[in-house]
Length: 342
Figure (cartoon, rainbow, N blue to C red):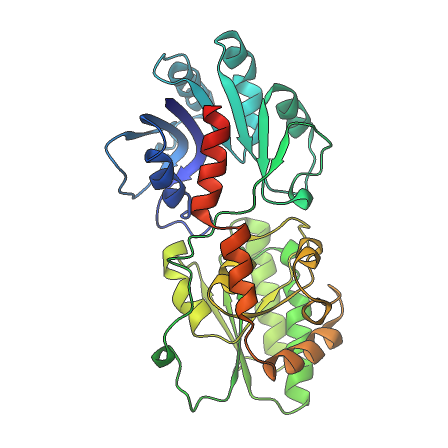
């Protein structure tokens, strides 16, 4: 069976979308041939049966030309079904054509936003895959909850020599796009409380500000850190490629998940797969974390209290086991592939 995949970017060096290379590698073992259409084509190495075509955003071609390239490629007869990753606009733009060509449309979406484009995409799609029930908020009988896809052979606990035994400082980590929806102010306020209590700790923030508004938000965070005299405690490391993230998870103690998206983020699952202690204020995390690991999203004092409490607790191997059982990449690709082939 031949599959057409449409995604935003194919680039192993992209922090947010670099993980999709591993998806393509797994898909290549399930299908005879895979054609990938993407807005941007970067650096990657994929099996011979995977062909990647850029629509031209990386070459700065105009949007009308990108749209022309999209239609030029979807009217080719070298695929049997379509898998659209995340962006509902492609389901909307290609929906009528694919229905006319009798191509089944499979759509992956994980976000709390319910937009007019998503409502239209839901009408055209035959099956909608999502990571959790909170990750697709539009009522539909087409939804199949599959879990996320974490490569647990890459995201795994580190060895004992990755962190000095004599280092008693609490190492706190946050990973994700720098944006207001991530609610980093609460973490900074909690850090101030920890410092007032005399604790020795560090906070590493991994992520880039993708938009101009996000860049301003990042500047405001750094300004807040400076005004509270927390500069010695905070480190903003910027963009890190997806496959270079494991050492960060492995060398830190506690992962803080503050996102207000409501949908299940991959980062907390990656941290759990690496054996980290985790704390979350996200609605989706309440389904699998104990109440001791959940805090109110705007309550910095509660977060500070729970950082102290969880730091004194033992690591829970059950968190990694949960990821392996419910969010393993191989299981995810098997579920999606079997549904497409059926």
